[in-house]
Amino acid sequence: MVRLGSREVVDAVVAPAHRGPSPALLGALRRWRGAHYWSDAGRTGVVLIRSVEPERPERWVLHALLALLTVVCALGAGAALAGDWFPPRPPRHLGPVAGTVAAALGFFTDIARGGWRDILAGSSFAFPLLGILLVHELGHYFAARRYAIDASPPFFLPVPPTLSPIGSLGAFLRIRTPVLDRRQLLDVGAAGPLAGFVVAIAVLVWGYSTSEGLSLGSETPGEFVTFAGRQIYLGDSLLTWGLRRWFFPDAAAVALSLPAFAGWVGAFVTGLNLMPLSQLDGGHVLYALAGRRQTAMGGLALLGLFILGFFSASWWIWALVALLVGGGRWTHPSVVAPERPVPPNRRWIAWACIAVFVLTFVPAPFRL
Image 1 (tube, rainbow, N blue to C red):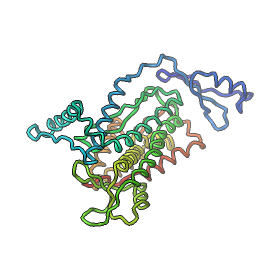
Image 2 (image 1 turned 120 degrees about the vertical axis):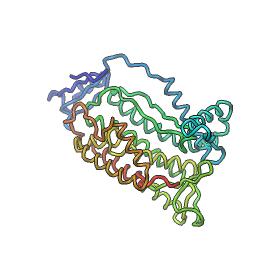
Image 3 (image 1 turned 135 degrees about the vertical axis):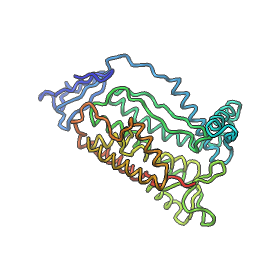
Image 4 (image 1 turned 135 degrees about the horizontal axis):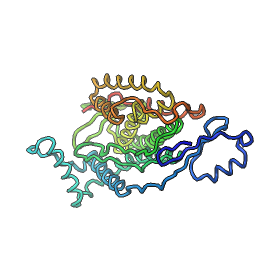
């Protein structure tokens, strides 16, 4: 028996008479006030987890406020993409930093004074995108609950549309108890991107069916959106390339609809999270599958981002973000029992994540 934060874990061996398991053992597991799972394919061992402390109260007001601000910011970004509203520009006389802050404060002030009506045109972008992000985080949350891991509800990260054409930096959970083994790590790390990917595909199919194909004229080949009167050309993943060829086989360029861009962002964020670095979802999955070999693979991934940065500087920024998330390391920290591998019948989950990463990775995301 070990204590992991507010959780107590019993790694039990099943007596031969109760393997299978026996009706008596099944009845005992049903009465167990916590989580449990078999530690091996033969069901000769069972892991029992329960809380031994009162559950801490969640900061629901903070979660709701961040979610509301993210909805407002995403609606503003969507309205600017629709061309129905333009975000305030930073005052030049204040300088770049103060001007940016003033523009952001001006946005929220205008919304509070009734300007919220002007951004409702962005709903077909905001709600599909936030739906993808929410399902992603709920995938992590419910997988953590499956193993009685103490996890917070999602924290959304709003970004004013004066700074971003997306309106959000995504969301995250706080895991407040250590992860016991690589099976737990795999299931919790993979549940988010796999769940979000399913929703992103549905949004992309809807979005491409409402987008507009253009013949080659003054347009640059590829797909683009228009944000506050400025065209932003988007790179392709294998997924978006295939959808574009399916829906618009003869078009030289495609003007993406608001839901199509929401799906593009959702798929792009999924690919970012599945990079095999530090505490990103891909780092969790790779460590669960390969153990300490994640160190070498993560180093190669970081080198790859450095090289890609010469073609799109955004990769240098993302490499820095990944390192900051991992406390300055690209390696994944150890779980409590790293010697226990992922059961063979669950390794398909890791391979599914690798396939999703291949489908959603965008080598050159943006062209202005």
